[in-house]
Image (cartoon, rainbow, N blue to C red; front, side, top):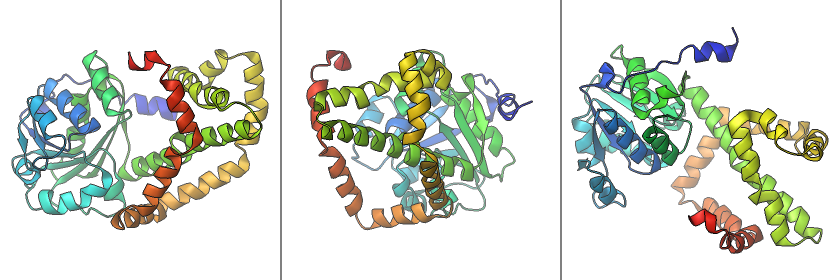
Amino acid sequence: MSAIESVMTETRVFEPSDATLKNATIAVLGYGSQGRAHALNLRDSGLKVVIGLRPNGPTEAKAKADGFTVLEPAEAVKGADLVAVLTPDMVQPRLYSEAIAPHLKPGAALLFAHGFNVHFGTIVPRADIDVILVAPKGPGYLVRTEYEIGRGVPCLYAVHQDVSGQARAKAMAYAAGLGGARALLIETDFKEETETDLFGEQAVLCGGASELVLKGFETLVEAGYKPEIAYYEVLHELKLIVDLLYQGGITKMLAYVSETAQYGDYTRGPRVVDDATKERMKAILREIQDGTFAREWTAEYAAGLPNYQAYKRKDQEHPIERVGAQLRQKMTWLNS
């Protein structure tokens, strides 16, 4: 049996009212894209959910309009059997120290959707609580829409601390409440989830893909080609390729492009992303593993995000963004 087959045999389908959390109160802290999706899916799975938000915050009205009881975070935590921390990473340490640690009852579960703070030690959970992770492998809107049509988004789950003896069951039941067990549940640990997630974002999905697009656009424009044509060739058509990769991997993608495109893939792709690129990827991974990135990002946030804002402005002011905005105005289907 292969490794992936071994993992997939662990998949378990839950009924919505899985007994592990049937009588529990779940406090969802945060009501952004993931927080809202989690809360709605859990409630629709028959579980009791309250929302913890700071008073008069930007999402309080939305949570109330969705029919949830909204409390200040500390009050939500006090009555909870499971607290799901679904706020941005850099907000979590203060939220934990001020609202969670003083009020979470012994034996309750503390759940994260990303292991960053626990793994890198910026949150050190109390010793008398369960600490678990459930990470849907999709954005919040997809977690919700897939649930609504009777499907689900695959979820990773992990146990960092098991005081009750039921931590794993709680994590799996929570994932089932999101709809994840309809698709696939994969067990991991906080280290693996955190490090692979950061690597994927930095080297491939966000950093790698963005820079590949920008460098391709610049290469064509600097060679005298129209910016509009360059935009279509290196950014707009990327969705077609990504959709095919998503649906059926590299094999399906290659099956749906021309033989000319396939030959270019085989012979030119490795020249763009070569062994030297892989070595730089390994260096990025080492910086994640040894905590260099976490320390850098934590310090940047504490300093008020000066470099982050500068990087963001640079990307927003790139010519590809201006050209893209003009072209997308003509793409009426994007707003339909």
